Amino acid sequence: MTMNTTPHHPITIVGAGIGGLVLARVLHVHGFESAVFDLDADRHARTQGGMLDIHGETGQAALRAAGLYEEFRARVHPGGEAARVVDKQGRVMLDHKDDGNGDRPEIDRGDLRDLLLDSLPGGTVRWGAKVMGAEPLGDGRHAVTLADGTTFTTGLLIGADGAWSRIRPLLSGARPAYTGISFVELDLHDADARHPECAELIGGGMFFGLGENKGFLAHRETDGSLHVYVALRAAEDWLSTVDFTDTEAAKAALLAHFTTWAPGLRKLITEADGPLTPRLIHALPTGHRWQRVPGVTLLGDAAHLMSPFAGEGANLAMIDGADLGQAVATHQGDTEAALSAYEAVLFPRSEQTALESARGQETLFDDRAPQPLIDMFTSHGEGGA
Image (cartoon, rainbow, N blue to C red):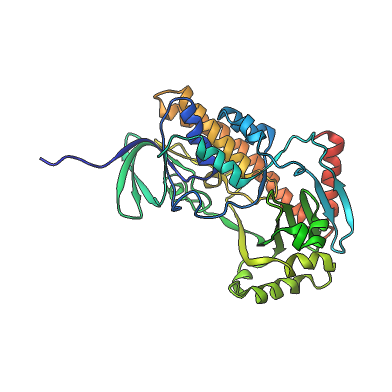
């Protein structure tokens, strides 16, 4: 007689990004064990990107639900809520200081992820475990297959695995599409000492240098470096024409788009340290949703990938994770009731935010830029938003 040795996990989370980790933490707070599978070899396998501003009604609410709000506040970046906008000639058009009274404190993404990882029981995250796909077994159960050929079963499957989710096809045929915006990401290290002019230009918080449907989006990191996204409206294949293995050639290709821009802005490219990283900005259709499928759902970018121009991607993933964890706890033992309640909140919220992201993209990449962004800041200031 042979025994069935296929492992079973009652709750499986695919992806140890911020949204998946918030979900695992909120479930833990309520006494539910989950298994998180991530393709990275370990928590240090790759850098986690730049600063995140954490919004009160989403990210901060999620951290409160996770019981981590006070620890989060201890890790925020003082001064990070400052904002400066310049035009293509480098003229400062708007300069908001951080007076310490803002409601969107900034934290390094890596610091936030470490906070979440350290709050989970050891062994919750299975590193080096790349999920290739899943198939329904009936009664809301799924069989999940890993890249090494092993399989396991689960009673609740959550795709928190980002833009190119392997779990999304169980629910939806939608695929991310190119938004028309291309990014090239770069860093200037030890900026005050090694790149003082660039450090002075960018200031202490967020920075926008805009015009002619392109520009520079940047911020100062907690380690003293400057993290810069050079952004252009461009054909989807433009980045593929640039050899990013040759950093000097890539810089030259990028500078060709900014020949009439201020020397100080061009220095953000010429003085960049290390390789340049190309990124196409994709989005799922606005209002992406699906019919209820037993035993499986999505959160974060897997559910509602959008352009980053509302600053809500990480915040939405966090509140998705918190809401789903609380729904599972509230509807103990009734997975379908929990998922229905969660998706009833998820769909309208993500649709509204996707609309804001699309509007934000049009605000930044406009023939009249940076004026539309200044108008937006001014109206929010007067309206108390």
